[in-house]
Amino acid sequence: MKNYKKINVGLIFSENITLRDYQINTYNTLKKNNIYNLKFFKVDINKFNKVLENIFFIEKKFQKPKLQATNIFLNKIKNSISINLENISKYNSDDVDIFINLSGEYILNKLKYSKKPLWDFIFGEFSNQFNLVSFHDIINSKPYSKVSICQMHRKSRMMLGEGYFNTKNYALLHQEFILEKSVVLLLKTLSLYNIKKVELKKYKRNIFKYKKIEILHLIKYFFNAYLLRFFKKKIYSEWNIYFNKNKNFLNFEKFGVKIKNLFNKNYFADPFVYTHNNKEIIFFENFDNVKKKGHISLLDLKNKDKIYDILNKDYHLSYPFILKLKNKIYLIPETSKKNELQIWECVHFPRKWKLFKRKLVGKNFADPTFFLDKKKTLWLFLNLSIDKFKDHNSELYIFKVNGLFDEFLPHKLNPVIIDNRLARNGGNLFYKNNKLIKPCQINTYGNYGNGLQFIEISKLNLNEFKYKKLKKYKNIHHFSMCKNMVAWDKQKNTIY
Image (tube, rainbow, N blue to C red):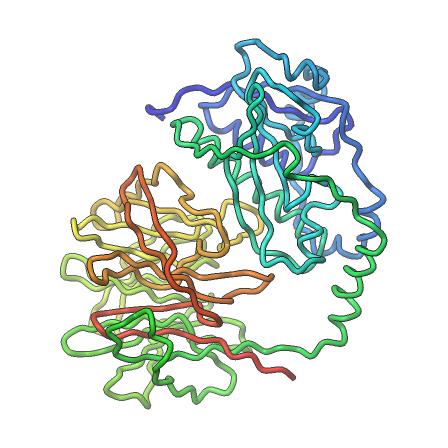
């Protein structure tokens, strides 16, 4: 923490405290980090709407186990400083550098001035906070829910950070998910604030408006979520793999040869094409719909009628990333069920492998993607989850890898992306016309694998990460390139 200064954070809670997981999680995380000095304030502003939540009692079974607040935390809130909004706006003591509102009610619209920077959350498009969080995103069938962190400092109003998250099917579950994700966004914004890299954007006072939840909204929600869903035909999603030689990767989907799938109860996905000693091999996830578990298989393009299983365990395996490093070939599949990074070394290409190393033990993540740049620096792109939902679609983390997978140095801007429309890895990075291209998944409308988004990375070092969006595609969620050979998967929905 040598490059970080101490930050005095004033946490604002409600007098009528009913602690929620995101508040407990925020406190626990900040308390562990020794760069934050925490001071507690309570304001008599929030009245939780228990009537609304009681209407959704049937959905409580979908919620995750609750966190327990420690007695130390509860006593700190109980014995904290009682203060009104006017005194917060005039607060001038050096024991607070910034205020963060965790009361559950949006307060910036009630203030015209704040001597100290005061941060607040907006969930979705409206400032209805716990009434229910992002509920209008569900009933309006939004592709995602946005969380914004806003700041008032003196008379200036600024947007500090935004995150985009996939919608859940049920109101209470979605509320819990969005509140949990706000902690991730807050931690990143605090980190950027500390190193003076927050991008400030002006916004008008009334850009976020309060919107009530009316009876008609509830009727629409319950009709769509329960009655209409009951009568809807079921959709079975099946993934197939295609491949081809293609010099213009942006138009890859126009031509393709489909891998024959002779398994009635399996689907193929996550293809990685790799060329070695004149062998063109496609490694892929072979998912068993009966066992609900994937294993790793391969296809030699010289013998397209024979599929070989190379890695099959009692836990789920997918995303078989292939990397050549120091004249050795490694297979790094997704092993999120084991909470570790497994690195397999090739004994005899392409079918024989042995476990070489286990790293990042205890971490929950998906789709590990390594990349060796032109300077021979090895990077790891990882969809790491630090929330109880084990969501892998919203945040992208980058690490610089030293040695032979010995040390993983985190990027200063981690997570470098908080956006379900392009955060999740969707295949190997590659250079094309001296441009660095990265495939990314699009996960929207409450679904997984809605599409693929190419981005061009213009800056990549431990302090910077810059990119711009290129082309996107529907019903494709993975793309791999090796030399001029490309492979991808495509979703086919069957209604029954």
